[in-house]
Image (cartoon, rainbow, N blue to C red; front, side, top):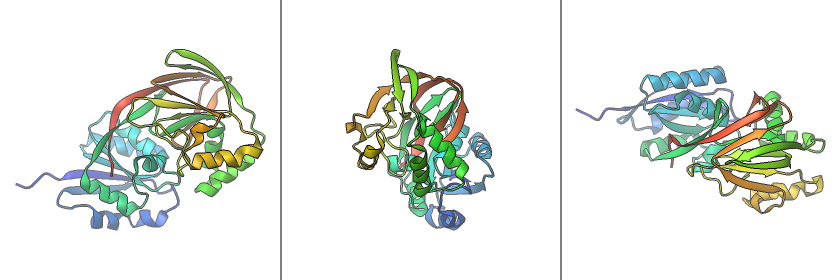
Length: 296
């Protein structure tokens, strides 16, 4: 008797990202790239973020050994929420605009190359992070970061240029807010442009917010960013793109296992690039080694 084939369930978000042509070619690429002697697969196209989570949950319950997210960080977020707590492995086929987790883990953003990684079956245990009754894998944020995520989602346009235009338009008039934080039991009061909770090192597009963040250390990096005078903004962007932002006096990073945040009003939160409406209080907790992912 031959080896029992591993079953892979691909979940495609048809609207994420910018490389539609590669997603249309997915079926052919999968057949050409995967070892058909070891794997069998199905491909499903979702119609909404909610359906992504449902498809993922049903695939995990049906015994698919690998669930592959084909899309950006938002698609990935929904796939993981559906499968978390099951024994299925996650595969990531980056086809979004920012692709933060893929860049962090060194997964190629070429669809064919990221498919080829599955053949090697190298597995890494990574942390996820709970935020109230939600979940994120890469990064969450409040303040200016969340405002940009909301405007970006509503713009209907993807890609770095669209993101940059929104930041440039909204930044000059944005007023920083006051935040009360309890980080691993210790209280902090901070005025901030935004606060990011980084499980990986970046927002996507290789913009590095926390150069020393690791996805398997049981910690989330609390990145408290003060508003930079507009004249210094290009310098700060340069630090973000060269992995040196932690040298700036405008950024404070505190590594934590748990964080509570109290804000003046209910707020939008950026969860893996997608805007989600939340209340005034946030409870953030790391779930160490709670997900297994196939990596290069």
